[in-house]
Image 1 (tube, rainbow over the protein chains, first blue to last red):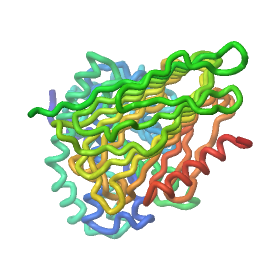
Image 2: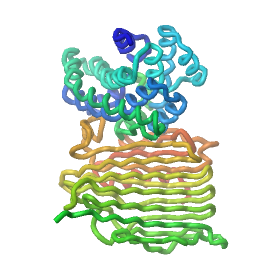
Image 3: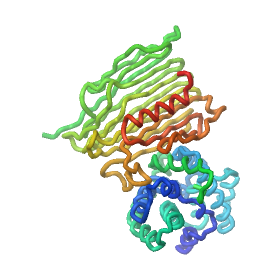
Image 4: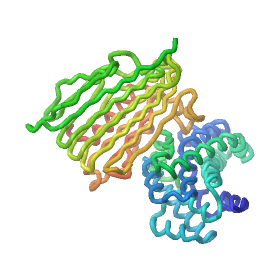
Length: 224
Length: 255
């Protein structure tokens, strides 16, 4: 296993289109719920423990070799917002395109054949991690980090927040990210034995409501 | 003295009575969970869940099972809100709801609110297993704390399967002791009432409902299957009920 491969996959400059999405931050800023570093931290913490936890368990399961088709269906059931399902598949398709070029693999090719319109991004992330020679812990770390780094960097643009402050928010969440990764990997090992019902299903009402409100806007800076 | 909680399971079984109505061959209350058959309308049988004791309290294990057979129509309500309270027994309380509706059956599961009083700790699971042509209306409302009170802790998982396929699986965790951020801008943001309305109808498969916002705090979302979910947050139970009633009305014209 190459530790450097993890840096390649987790790099914010990895060409997978994530920068176009705010992870719900744009809707939360517009609604006045995120106004600065303090509320950004609370937003990221909530996202980490809900969407981040589910994404991490999906990615870790895919990295362990669980059938991506069943994981994708489980992701659908855990994503009631159609706007978020569309965003997750769009991000999945973009990540798959990049990953196939970077780490050519039969499993990634098979995933592309099974999901011509894109699979949920965390599922692709887990299969890409496998192709890169990485394991479930690495895949879960990528997923939890993305769940908070996306909103943090989007908020820098949306509120002209000091980038130092936004990065300090991420650093303060590091310990909680470790805990969520541990739980997600544990859940993923249970999925291997007992199927996808063992995946966490943590949800946040306001992330779903905000995603649909956001999708109805005529003009927006971010895709989701 | 070591206090132990109460374990109770109530069961409802509904089937067609052969004359266009619905019979209830099983109607078994248990301890704190009493069941009353009340006047139904048309072919629908109506059952009221009556809390005969307070609770669930810490350590209690409550379960309600409803099974609706082909051709039966069942409406289940409750006489009053359920209030989760702290108990003398150690540990959390559990409340498990298991609903099965066969092809051609219909269940309207419309209980009153669940109120999580300060200091309570409750884990709720609600699972609906439906046949391909079963119909369901399911409402859940969670209220965090009585008026002016800190909320208790609640974890509530809602799973809906249609013909063996899971179309909804989501868990809400809120109250002190829940994972961080539950009341923040990506959680409830100070709202003290949250609700879900699930409507399953096979017609949604051929005529999909489109997602729409019902104001800034409620949305109607088509699920990956012939089902929709309305999710709403509100400052209190009354506003929440109005949002969910309006949403249900828009999905069932003429009813």
